[in-house]
Length: 201
Image (cartoon, rainbow, N blue to C red):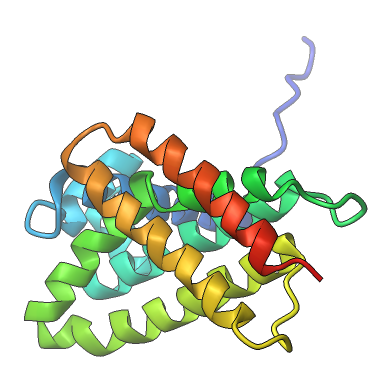
């Protein structure tokens, strides 16, 4: 009688990492779709296909889960943004502005916004979300400077780059209420022209 060959078992550490990633991605999706009030650990665990106990093993509190989720997805998007523009070739500024605006008009921004609103009213979230927002904001600014080829030693350049990020955030807010695609395209085109002028060396 032949011997059955068993498929190698996935290492425990890999399974744990995969579970954690599923929980983080599910948390952002739930937050974007249902807001803070509708996003419980149980809802996220069900969406991720794991037990509530497994979820709490990785993230003991609801606050742990959602702040980690927003930071995780922000890091993933930052890496994806960098990958769009290889360092070997100069990036087209309009393409960079479009990509930056896209960061603020998707599910991640919607999820982060729900987290900010909750943090304004819940003491246990406030400090953590304020710190998280500062880190994510610094990273977004660093990436924008890098991709635009901006020299912040030149007076006014830092403020110009920050203005781009503030504008992108404003467009993200407008998109929450209606499809703002047409106007957004015109604004992006104008900002690219302004940046070309402001960053000209």
